[in-house]
Image (cartoon, rainbow, N blue to C red; front, side, top):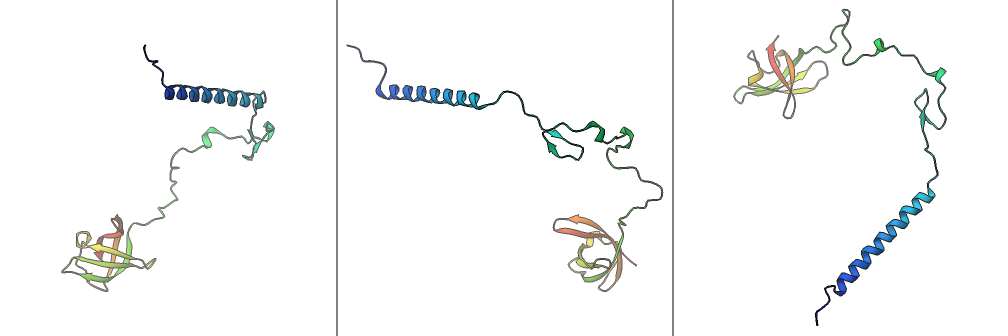
Length: 148
């Protein structure tokens, strides 16, 4: 006499799958029954607020396509660049044997690191210098350092 190919655990798994399918179908039908027919719309009025009523077209502002600026607006002749890359400061510390030092900016009193590779003239402590800033590994560094 041959054994049945279906074991007890297989039967239980089939029952569980069938039960899960039926529950899923019931949930789907319940969602369909709750859903009201029609589509709800949300409108944006002339102030940018969300409303359920259509906005009044007479309140919509007129915008010319030529007034829209894409990218950076062109500079006018009267404008000058607001940021001057060359700064002035005083050397607060400089070790010539190790090749580094610190410069204090005259404008904002911030201390900037400088390395011998970014120094053009020979400098020493308390010298008045002009320099440019460059982003380094640990913050802004003074480069192109020249004595005033």
